[in-house]
Image 1 (cartoon, rainbow over the protein chains, first blue to last red):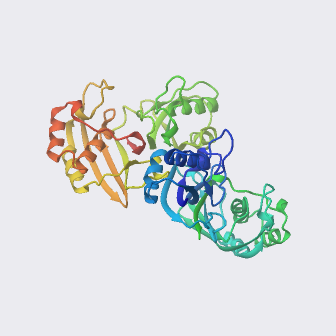
Image 2: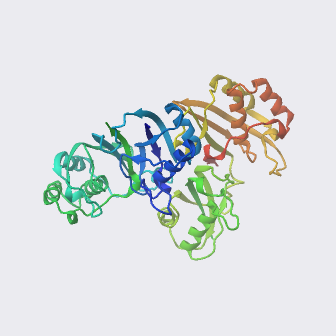
Image 3: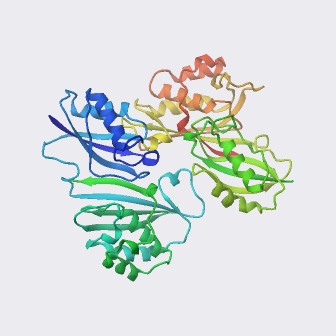
Length: 244
Length: 244
């Protein structure tokens, strides 16, 4: 058996998230259908992590095992020919049997985009949260500083998760304005379910003056999910890279 | 009666073109539904021109007449609140009764985007023609030179059109590579149905070495629709601006 790693991009707008679910289109189902058709047998695909319904990926990673004689490099063009336009394979690589896309990952980089202006955009709005409030970038950066480092991020997790530990190390949380876009980049050794969207929602609450930077520190220390008031919507979120 | 001009943007991917048609979603139908709901009575909307199914607009113009007391400037945010995310109003202006979005136009600017590389992109592919052939930009520019000026563009029209004259003046036809994107800009006093897509298809035929620049001159002079072999697909096309 050969283990093949794929680096995958997708526009998640029209999908019910990454994870396979009955009766609705998901990224995992589309990938499994394409791989299965190509190798000629039912093949399961394992991802580095779920992404939410409506969220995107520039560098999701998935693996599958196969006995197909197709050369690894050929999987890129062969799968792109079978996949819907909204999903693309950008790399294929053979990995050792011990490799696991989730457990072998040492970190992840997410991007979150805010369109901060009065007018919406039919183009950018597909990939950004449209926010019309005036945002104080300096305050958002001060709040980001509070979150960087190793912390128990329980307050920023979601009720849907049941992980053993809610401690993560956030290496980087950049807030970069570019014209009327604000690009937020979050890099950590791992993320809790909803963590990026709840962090972005909280930074935005700070930026518009709803809560103070000190309040962000108290929210973090409280480990209480109820203290986070705003969860940013999924369309601004992209999984940019999984680090191994 | 007040005549209101709107400048409209849309992602046309999921629409059957601009023009109203029974039982399918079109840009015109969505605009008419939103305007009618806002002003409280059935209101028709007239566009500067049709755009094809799957094509986009950054600056389509439309007008409607109304006796509603809503201030003109208010139509921007009020309509954006009612329209689907894929359609946005960016400007509203009151025009004299004599103004007509199509007949008053003195010219139009279209953009066409080609993604010229091996790998497809789920993001750019929505707004570009994915072309993997190597393209000779210098030859494409030579072919564009042949088409600039006042000509009978009958060869580049489509069987679907029944206009009286097929003479148009093409002011500008730029071919600009930007990384692995090629941006083509076509500006003229008017365009025949399918003209931009058939011009781009022909330039691409030149760029990949299928036909010579001289052959483009012969196609133009023939005024014979059958001589154009390639029509570029709609998703690369955007109506950028209507000039008055």
